[in-house]
Image (cartoon, rainbow, N blue to C red; front, side, top):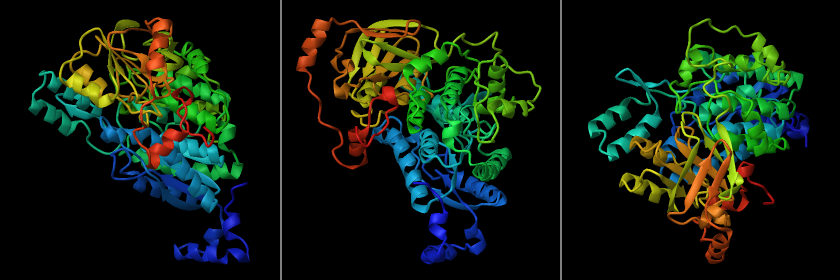
Length: 557
C-alpha cells in the first residue's frame, strides 16, 4: 500500500496520533507538512559512525529549510574492523539485512513520505540503500565520510597497516614497540577506513548509481564540507519529494552498469559485488555475474587506491573526488550518461555542472594510460566454484597460481596456522564452512590475509574461501566460493595437498581431482551441525541464499 504521512495525522480519528507528536514538540503547522525520515547508523561501536548523530542534525535542518518535517531515527551498525578475526564477524553481513529491515519497519510504521539515510560503516551503506530501494519512496543517501590517514615517519597509515603489522610481529619482523607505535596513530579520528575498502567503495557507488549527491563520497568525516553535504542532502530530499522521483526510477539496469564501472575503475572491494546483487534484487533487476564480467572487461582501472595502490580517499578528495573519476569515464563514452539521479538531473548534467580543481596529480590515470586495461573485480568459475567466486586483482602482479591445499574448517584455525608459521610458499589456504549458511554470516578474513602479507607471503601463497574478504585485503585471495561447503559444494570435498589452480585471465578456479574421486568423497560427506540453533544468526542461516546471488534473505528460501 502507498506510504503517506497523511494516513497518520489527518482526520478526527488521528487526534491521538497528533497528540503524541505534540508531546515531542511539533505543532499543527509541522503536522501539515510532509514527513521525511532522517535515519542514521550512529553509535559508539565504531569510529565510522560515532559522529553520525551530529550529522543527522544538519540533515534535519536541510529538510526543514526544504519545507518538510524531519523525523530522526537510528538503527544498528557493526564495526567490521572491531568484529574482525573472531566470532563477532559472523554478525557483520547479517547486520546488512537487519539494517534494511529496521529502516523499512520504521518507515512503514510511521508512514514517512521520504527518507534521508546517513551511514558510515561497511554494511550500513548497502543496508540503508537496500531499504530505500525496497520502500521506493523519494530517498537520498549520504555517506558519513572517510577517516583521515594516520601518519608515522612520513607514511600514511590505515587500520589495514595495523593488521599487517600483527603478521610482521608474529614473523619476528617488527618489534612490540613498533607495533604499538603503528596502533597508536593509524586511526586518528572519526570516519570510515581510509583506503578504497568497502565503505569508501560503496560511497563511490552511491554517487555513480545516482542515490547520492555529486561529490558527496569523498569529503572526510571531520571536514566542514561534510556538514554542508549532509545539509544539502536534506534539502535535496525535500525537492525530490516535490518532484516525486523514486528509487526505482533511478536504480535502472543502466545505473547498475555505471555502478559496476565505478567499482572496477577505483579498484574497489569485492564486497561491492555482493551488495550490488542484493540492491538489484530489491528493485527486481536481474543482475548476474555475467554482467559484472561484461562491464569489467570494458572498464579501465584508473584510481591508484589502497590497499592495492598508494592513496587514500582523502587524497582523491583533494583532486575532485568521485566526480573526477566519473568525468574521465564520461568523456570517453563509457558511462550511461542519461541515468536519472537524486538531483532530478541526469548523471551527465550533474557532471557537466561540476568544476574540478586544476591540479597536478598522480592518483587517477588517464583512460589512455590506466593502471590496468580492464577492471579489477574478477569473477571466477570452475570445478571448485561452479556458481562462481570473486577476486580483486588491484595491486596483484600474478595472474595464475597453482598450489597445494591446506584446509581449515574455521577461520581461527587458519589464523593460528599462519601465526605459527605453518603456511609455506606455494600453499593454497582453504577456509571453509564460513559461507552465508555455514558460518553463518560469511565472515571476512582480513586478520588472516593481513597476517600472511605481514609475514611476506602475500605474493607467494593464495587463499580460497566460501567466506568474504575485507576491502582492505590484498593478494591472490578468492572469496564467495559457491556453492558453499555447508550445502555440499565442491569446497567441502577438498583435502590437504589437493592441487588448485586460480587463473584470472581465463576466469578459472579448478580443483584437480577426478570426478570419480570427488563422487567417492561426496558419498562420505555429511552436513555438519549448525553453529547456531537459536537467535538472529540461526534465523539468517535458514533464510539466506547463495553468495552468487548477493547472499540475500528470502521469505521463501
